[in-house]
Image 1 (tube, one colour):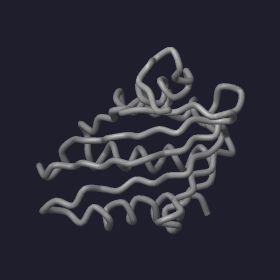
Image 2: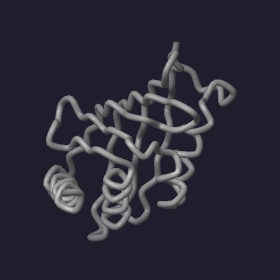
Image 3: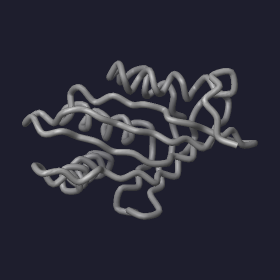
Length: 146
């Protein structure tokens, strides 16, 4: 059953939320296992492998949306992980609003996030093609990882 009781939230997920909101790349990377795997079943071209790739992807987001904030709406703890629902908001560097949300299912081990299945979408707005912005960021991360 989803809840908002902080006592039930794995500590690493709270650290991740704080790192996102502080735009603290070191703290964000520390939440992830070195072999972190991000799987996007609905957008497989966005899949990422490795902590460094994930950190580069978030760094690109922080650059494009410098005031982005993450809100953890609810979660449900499972045996080996946690199901989470998120909302991100902010303003793109060009002034257009940015909103995204969805579900991330995290696998956890030894107080680290080992992987995630990501079901998130950017809310369409006028202005930049956010899908293209994200694709560009992921492509740059993939190229840098190769």
